[in-house]
Image 1 (tube, rainbow, N blue to C red):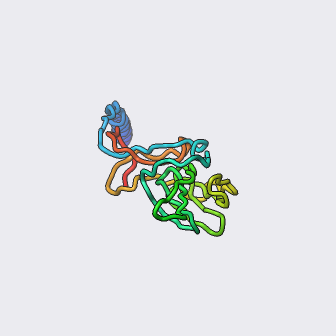
Image 2 (cartoon, helix red, strand yellow):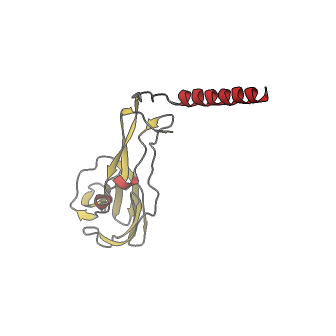
Image 3 (cartoon, rainbow, N blue to C red):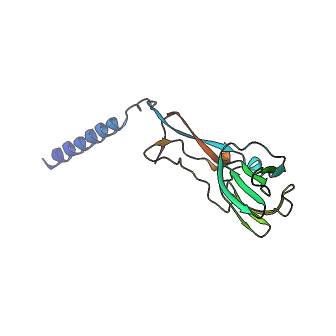
Length: 181
């Protein structure tokens, strides 16, 4: 009797194990593509961001911060650089030069040194000759790269620092976005 009870229990355990293993063997469902409106980062390679040049004047398009030092006005062109204008005669201001600083949104001046953000870097620029501004020092990665869009309640493509510095966000249709803010 005990032998028959033992063999029926063993058989029951084996059957239960087989059923459990079969229940775990299901084919994986096909991944469904979810298309959703969201934001994709716009990247600029670090080599391109870190190019600095003092060039001839160009038209002002999107003014940012303004700093006045002596007879000169320094106007930030959002994410592009700094316009330098001779304002000795306020009735007729004269453009002097444009300093290309990709990713620039803020400036400050102390003495003859203009400090500017260059996306993730901090630059110290010699402005003693506004026609020919010189780079004195660059501190790389002084600022964090913003890895999410400026909007909240949105899906977005996750940032990949290996692609470069994020210089903007574009609204697009995304497939299976993994990030949300």
